[in-house]
Image 1 (cartoon, rainbow, N blue to C red):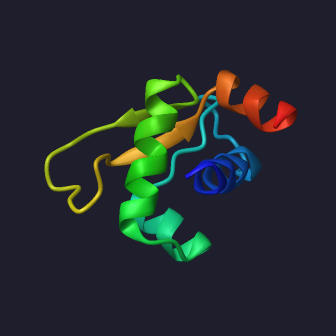
Image 2: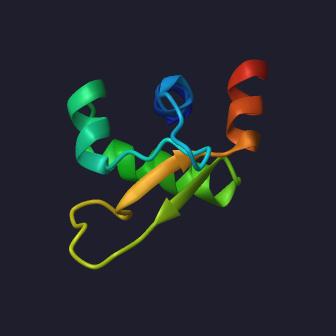
Amino acid sequence: MRDNLRTILNFLASIEIDKTGKAWKTGSEIKDDLDMLIEDINDAIEVAEKRGFVEWMRFTGSAPYYFSKVTITSEGRLWTENE
């Protein structure tokens, strides 16, 4: 789990931010770019959200993902730098 969390957070931290200071990705984009299982993505993002490492948007119709879009927070960036 920790490796999946680290992989996803490093991936999110590497994305260029937009004008709002965010870099949103969908579950499908994470899966395609990192070639991870949907269950592993969901688990890692859920843990990251509870720890304040990511911010997520949730809309209906995002299944099989628990979220619609996700972006890393400053706490998440700090964790990746110290990990």
